[in-house]
Image 1 (cartoon, one colour):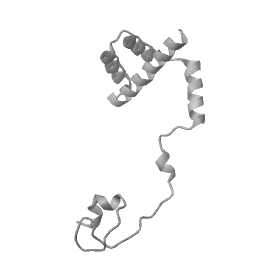
Image 2 (cartoon, rainbow, N blue to C red):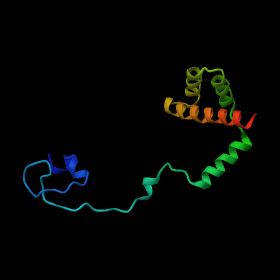
Image 3 (cartoon, rainbow, N blue to C red):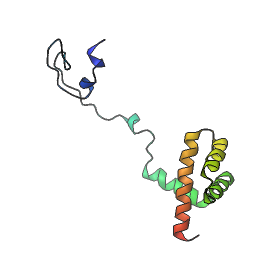
Image 4 (cartoon, rainbow, N blue to C red):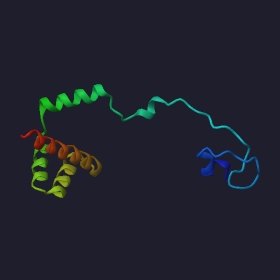
Length: 113
């Protein structure tokens, strides 16, 4: 059981230099590391967002997405989520897709389609 298991050390609390206590251990300084490229994984750039929005505008929605949107409009959210889950695999992806489709429906209502 080393001193690294102490959560206070990770929080940047200075060590006391004592052998015992909550901040025990030799006093050291935390290294400030430059952010790595991998830490921005999953964050889409403006360019990618623009391209995806244009593609969505041109191609529209897939048939399963249109059916799910119809279910959402008829306030059958749970049925729609289960339907999407069967189509794309996991409940997490289904929830994310539901979010996208509900915002798309709200956008259509606002624009007057």
